Image (cartoon, rainbow, N blue to C red; front, top):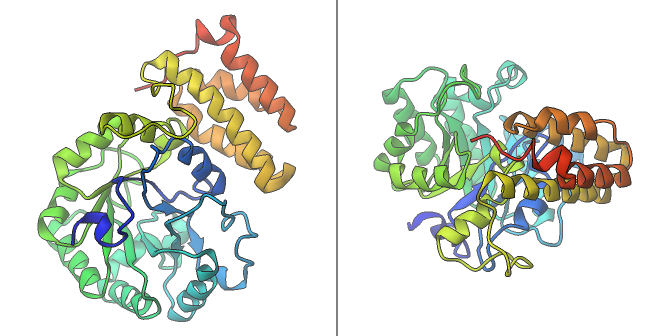
Length: 349
């Protein structure tokens, strides 16, 4: 099997957005896709979907399942541990013309642990294998698993766990190499990605501590992984795909043919201002005014700690309640020389 193209022949770009709760919805996918090199194809996530709720939802109508006309190669991620709910969820998700399904075995939040979801499944290898097996039996689509290095870091147990998943039918493994207890703290141990890549013929996607395009390239070079998944950094630098395209000699994104990707802190700060405007407009378009406000403010809250002007930015934008306010205030903030250009230009590295 030749990397991701062995599962999805169209895929020719080995970088992808991560499934993130409250973030990897239609709007963020649209914003990131704006920066995808022309003719580049990659897989796209949804935010994490609960298999107990999906069977009773109207696909394409709920905030988590909304899709755009540009959505393709969609690989929803589900949180599930019961066969009946997984089967029913797959039936519903087929309405979105999905191209695969990802099982979450990496979520470390207490609620998931309490109900034996997410990374809790790594504590019960036999049960985890049965979930993969039952999912594969319910669909002909590729089934992937996103996981961590476990509840406790033990390479022998970790490899044994992953072997069980592959034998059960998993076509792809995505590894965020932190333990459950680490959550997003500490450093991701990329050596664990190398360990999986050297041990399996199954494609391996690496995830964790990819904050810049240079990190993405370095992860591929150091680990040999088949793909790199980028998470919260995409809320700050959705143009990472554009930068990567330039490094790989690909055509610029559509509509950006006459420009070069932002590289220095000043250029990136200015581009982020355009992202805030675009993100706000799309939130009001897809979600309506009430939910749009929540989505925008959550997006700003997640991305602002990465920015050396984040506190000041959220102070100004946090008061906005209407789309025109977000547009006007963000434009003023990022274009006013006294406020932004001299004092708040650099993204943190």
